[in-house]
Image 1: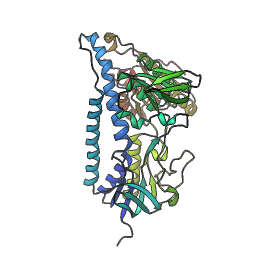
Image 2: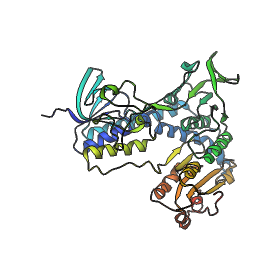
Image 3: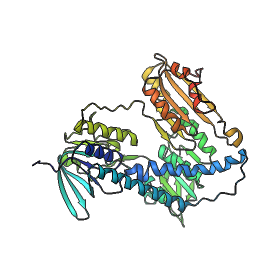
Length: 455
């Protein structure tokens, strides 16, 4: 009889955890998975999926306005916040069921409760029926990340992104604190849905880590859409003012608000996991330290996704999970590359990007060629919408390889995904130039930019 109750015990039922458990189960491994909350993790429940659904909802307001230029006369639109919440909740519940079905059909034993490590091979789960322990040959920690809010006066009055999808009532005045992609997305979404939005960021420009042209262009465009974006602005305190909140800024100005969202970053969700007992070491940033195969300092314990404090992207967690499964139950041939990982930001307008920023490319390659185009999309020649589109290519001068591609505009994420394949394959600017564009589309601009604007 085996000394272990299972071959793999997965802690966390988010994207990475479910993928690893399901794939391991399909390979014949005995797999258990513990999750204390809804299956699907942040992405399905309070992240990517509901955020994108709300982004779609917010876009309709602009579409209704744009329609007039194309001959459509519409009745004044009325937004029903409760209906949107109800429909979103129904879809998320469906996805929760899909995740459970995938696990069950792969033979995964699902345990509902909070899991902690007792030692490198023992997991204890606190369930509704009491605590129980299991011995596992291997353990995978995939508990994701959690929002982080700094210590400020009135911290008890603020909300994080996890709470934004079920607000009651809809906030007429929203203050968003932060300059990362989550802050920018929620500012755009709630402005589109009809809230008066003020976004505060203490830095010089939003979206630190993105290409500088993208950052400055996006800032100008969201202001066109009505977001009151204030840079170099910080909060001193938050308090009650009757039924509303009062946000006192560092310069003394007081902003009234119905809701204050702090989107100031996420940290690895490691509290209460018993990692010390298993000999699992954390990095200075609080993430689980892993090697190239996602093995921690405890040889039997692995970790993937946001809990390792690397790239906080769902597809990255999925890919990392597949590396672990291949290492434990496969041919050990799969490897993970973080080069040319595409990403999108669902602001209005949206952002799509893959590869290096201009600054990163100059630091890595030295001489680069920059191709950039800014234009008003064909649609807006009739709509009257002042929104503009930005496209940018960063090319390594020595090899002619396209090492960075960035877009701000409608459908940016959809457009950039295809170009990410070409860049992963090593496409050069000459290949881009020889590719026939689809006319008339915005995407064709990436293959028609001929003259560099910077070296």
